[in-house]
Picture 1 (tube, helix red, strand yellow):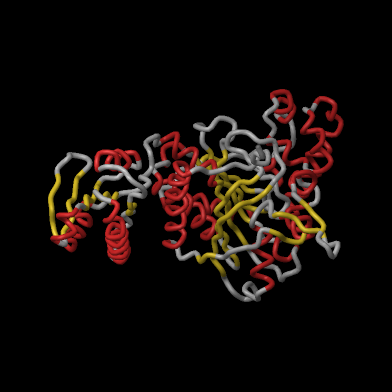
Picture 2: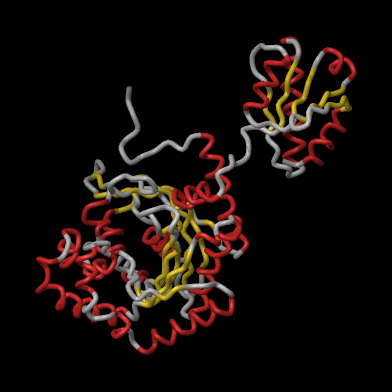
Length: 424
């Protein structure tokens, strides 16, 4: 039997219902902040990510899924969304002398070691803002995330960590100082940190190895290299967060793994998922548009890991999310199957038009009312519609409340009103 590719997973119906709740809630918040949706291709030129993400990053060096097409061009499945977003807006003339607030959602691909909460095909919602220089947009993006956690009931199990990397030149100066300090100690570093030493030394600050962290205790400190202008920007951001009532922790070791970050960086983290604690991360990348061939443009954004957010939602709220159906239509004889289908269609159209969101399922196949009601209960329905010869002849429906067992026979129009009043 052929099985799923390692690191790719199936999201089965029960999980998909929770997934839909999470994604719909997040996208509703995005729309509420007047961020507009942009849809990006799965395949991009490999050069886009080499230039945007950085050739020395783990993503480009060893994690991208890359192929050559029939013309010999190197293409890659997108490992992240920001470079693609910049490319799309720049290519379509939506950045120069303009401001943009956009969001996107969809799968990303990285060749990583699969584990719970980390997959080779994973899903993100990203929010990005272009053309805004001040710390107010940084604060808005962080607030956007905070509102997502509030809507999902996750505020009490996440915390915000923030830092500033300073300007691009300040980051480079710190990188050089850190490299000078760590190079003579290379043989004492853990294996991952040794590899990162020449390619991306700032990522060594993220190491979970105790011996490496002990060495870093005497290393040059990032705040000592941050320029004055960036310090002012960061202080103003913290003041805005205080005013908005968004709690935070300043983490001077927070650097993020992608080359394009400068100035503000932040992460939303949780202790409820073990090692996979980061559920959302972002910051500023003021030089990225220029790096990809555009004019200098201030930019900021974040990416939220939907896999981990859905997993956290399940940990916090273990009850089943929604049902496969809310209304289940049963019929007593096969000759009434067509009438049941017609009633189901009319109910769906009416409920959809009224915006109720109730889901209607018509029984398929044979079986008496008792067996059909078992099916109704199994799919989580709150109501059963019973259709027999008497109902068909009278143009009525019998509604059975599957919670308390009460039932009533009413005209079809009245049945709709009863279902609408019950909600979900």
